[in-house]
Image 1 (cartoon, helix red, strand yellow):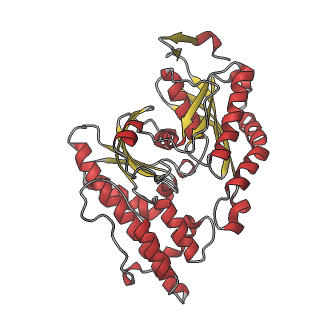
Image 2 (cartoon, rainbow, N blue to C red):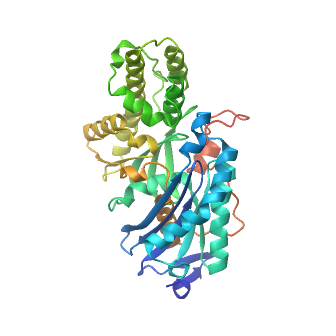
Image 3 (cartoon, helix red, strand yellow):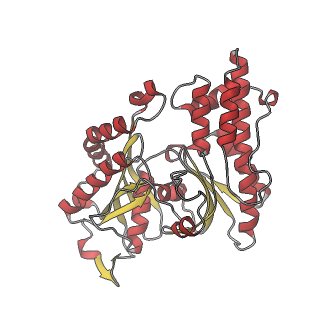
Length: 378
């Protein structure tokens, strides 16, 4: 059933009835996955994934060792219609059963973002549905709620190929940055070092597999920002040092040892900064929950290290199910449904954004990069 009868405008914001479930179609095209999902959000906040379809472009980009933006955007154009149709079919619903359509509006490769956002606008206009433009990072922030009910607030480590941030999450549209990368993200370091080791694309999972047979103690990798007491990250020095060491590896065992050293170093830095954030967060919050989300959260060593750090500080630890760690549309649909519940809908002229910080106040008033430098996507 359409939500037209239960949708009203209050104070300039559209407000959904709080006593009914909301069913939202989500679209994700920010990088190299074309994804669509239908999620139903109950009045008490429980999310049910009715369908989640992801078309990966790994084969399209493998020959280039990374994502080629033009190829990614073209593939999104070719695949989006079929992926959405399959998601609707698997959910057993038609467009008339939706209450809204959510689409990633950034950050990401803007050519790809435009494809999913434009498709979402078309559905919204054709069916008279609310459009919800979703920050891709906010999708990751709520992704743990796809596996089980999770109450706000919580401390979040968002760690992926393009982003690495610590955030206090009070709800959609209400987050405060505690720390961020000042150069590269952890996932980028994984991928670039894997490429230097000749592991191909995607590099992160390949490096993790190689590290299983390695002994990283033979390599001494640099530790970044040791003199600083904040929660910021830096992985550029590690990436450069490991890439140079990769050129000296002559045997498979040496490569495995370096892979293990890299994985351990990344997990250690994530743990050290998270430990600082956990201690600071605990001073003001009795609800002690530490959520780790993003593609790097699928790495078993990283996950185990961060779980131990959380438990040491008296925090419960939670990561999304593996299927929702990497890019997917279920997280976009859920973020869209939560926004729709709060009346946070978007105009159809909303523009795609290559950069979109979750905490825009901190990004403007306490930037991590000097003026004139674009820096990390976040």
